[in-house]
Every structure is written in structure tokens, then in C-alpha cells.
Image 1 (spheres, rainbow, N blue to C red):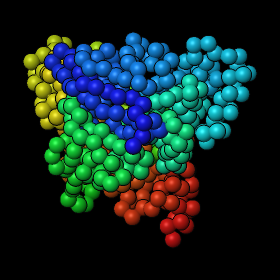
Image 2 (cartoon, one colour):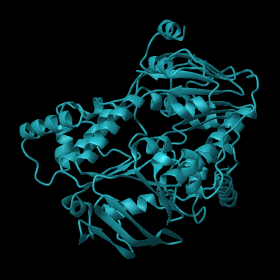
Image 3 (cartoon, one colour):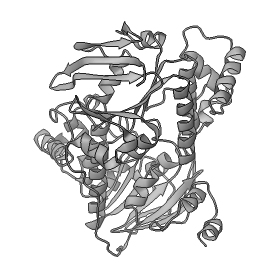
Image 4 (tube, rainbow, N blue to C red):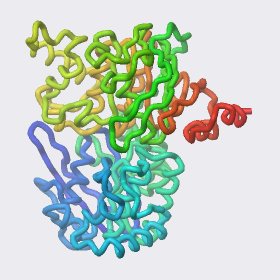
Length: 507
């Protein structure tokens, strides 16, 4: 048994219409890598925000190092030895690594001394990082290193990590796990939140499972299967996505030498992308974050206009057309960033349903919105995709990240698209909800739609894709049949290898 570092005793936190945490108790030992599992909306985020000083509990108490722990703000938590790496990075692209890290320090040293310290810590923990590189030029994995090193410079006793591998390559995951095991061996406790249950099994020694805000049990992930943990989370049997094989139909979407400069200062331009997507098929597009995924979705959705002769929907040139006309034709898209792009955080779910469903769902007439019809549409999405919310009048920002993701994806699927492009459809979504979303995408394809899934989750792409292509520095590889692709072949494709090289490995 490890010495107890942090004890949570009867923590309870309620918001209007929902109890986020109810009488939650468990302990974390010194040097322990402890997983916190649960469905979206189970209360994980509220709990870790309480530990980090962002939320004050209604009842219960915390004990850290044998003393009462009541952080009034994150600064107090950090002073007590609690650090947190959030799922969404909080970095300024135009500043370098050292400047970003200095912004999070109470009394930062000189840039020279800080740079030396960054290099020392990054070398010690196997996270190579140049303190003078501009953050906008870093990969997603390197950006995460900045966040981790910023925490390590605080010499934390407890490190909280929220979905740390969602944007990492398999190689970067391996490096991260080596770092976390080294920290654990030195006595730093780690509270690890992830929906990737096989990673939990490989890394963690204890898992606490939350369901509907309550602690429903603990287990040793090393002796518990991923399916068993998932079923503890949902309180029932986990559905496995399935689909009947069928021959693809006519070409629904064609890209002819699609090229476009990125509208983002540190984005990736699209270069000569050629592609045919047929009705009834799921095309998976993989790639490390920052290789043109956002730009590709923007070009296909109409947010990024391109020259004529590059994008054809059912034979019609739509490259210069905007999102409204493309949606009216049946070309729909769901972007990666749910808060602020796919949904307006401060607007209600009914209002968010109108944002993209106005045309195809007939939610307006002669310039006037039909609020009753819009609310009915939002309620259909909520019911069909099991969105955990008191109702359609609640704001998007009141939902957990996973529940908002279910709403965003469901909103597009229920509009019966002819072609649907989704970027990171199950990002931050629990195992049960991820299975439901994947099944909905497969059903959409089975009903004759063409589906493009852009994702960094290779397991997801191999599970649902008929063909697979890789995006690298704005270029797309030649799509290949997904069944039978090896890890080596996928790795070469992700790295931008030519088709000749991939074919050679296959032989």
C-alpha cells in the first residue's frame, strides 16, 4: 500500500438541474498513477476542477499531505503542489516556448536562466524541447511538452492530466508514458483522465469509476479488460459498432488538384489533393495534428473558398460556393473545435440547432425563424444521441465536452446528408458514446451517404473505414483499402512516404 497523498471525502457539487458530484470519496497514493474514468457528464471535470481550485464543493473535504486542502484558486493549488495539464492547450502561437512558460510563473527568472532550466528538465524527462522555438511552429506533441514542462518546473506532488494523448502519435504516446513512469518512480502522483481504455490498462495501477456523479467502484486496470471497465462506466453492456458489407455506389465527391493557402498564421496549406469518395463508403483520413486537417474540412465545407475546378459535388463545381448552398445540396461538415466553431457556447442548444439546420430542416421561412420547429429538432438530437442535458434551452457551454460533441455530430447526421465530413468525431468522448457515434456514421453510409472521417485515432479509422488515406504537410496519400493495412504501412503513410515505398513495405 502506498502512503496517501490526497484523500477526497464525500465531495458533492450541484448545479441548477444536475448534481455533478455526489458524495465522492477515494484516495491517491504518493507516486501512484491513478485513472479517473466515466462517461461524458459523469462528473470527472468537476472533480478535477475542485482539486485544482477552479470549483468550490458544496460539501465534503480534501486532505493533502495530511492537512486540510481548500484551494480558493489554481494559484493556491499550484503552491500546494498540484499541477494540471488541460485537454485544450493554453499557449500563445506567436511567442516562443520560454515566453509561454514564463507567463504561467509567479516570479519568472531571466529568459536565459529559464531557457537553461527548460533544457535541463526536458532532457531529464525525455521531452526534448528548444526553449527559443516559436510555439506556432510546434507539432501538437511538442506543444503538450511545453504544458508538461511548465508543470514540472513547479515540482508538483500531484500532476493531473486530462485526455493527454488525444492529439499524439503512437510514438509520442510511448515517450509520454516513459516520462510519467519516471515521475511516478520519483514519487509524483498522477491523476490520469482518458477514454482510451487500453492506454489506461498499460499505464495505470488503480482506476476510480464515476457514473452519474457517484463513485461506483475501483479496479486494477492491469487485471481488468477494457470492455469490463467500459461496462462499469455505463452500467450495462457495451455495444460494438457493426455494418453489413456493401459495394460502394456512384462518386458523390471529387477533388481535382485541390490546393489552397491556409488562412491561419501557423496553418498548413493544401497541396494538389486528388480524391474520389463514393456513396455508401467511409473514407478515413489520418494524420498527426497540424498537417492540414482543419484546412481540408474548411475547404470541403465552404468556409474556405477555392478556385473553380477543384471540388465537385455530384458533378457540380462547388469550390467557389459558400456553406449555405453546399448544405442545401447535402454536403455537410462537423469541425474539430466544438466550442466556438461547431457550436456557439453561450447560445442555447435550440439556437445551435438553427445555426446549421436552418436550411435542410426548414427552420426559417421568409426571414422568420420557426422556434417551435427548431426546438423540436434540437430535442430529437438530444434524444437520439443521448445528450445529457436538462433540455434544449440549456446553453452549449453547460454541457460536458463529450455531450456537446454528441450534439454536434447528431445535429449533422439527422439532417440526412448526401456527403458528411467530420473531423475528430469522438474526440474526448467516452467508450459508449464513441461506439454510438461510430455506429451512426456506419448507418449513414449504409443508407447511401458518402462519409469522410478525419481523425488522429488510428484505431477508430481502422474500425470503421473502407479506405484509408494519410494527410502529411497538406498532401494526401493515395487511398488504400483499410482492411489488412499494417502498422508499418500506416506509419509510412502518416510520415509522407511515397506510394512506391508503402507498396514495397506491403510486399
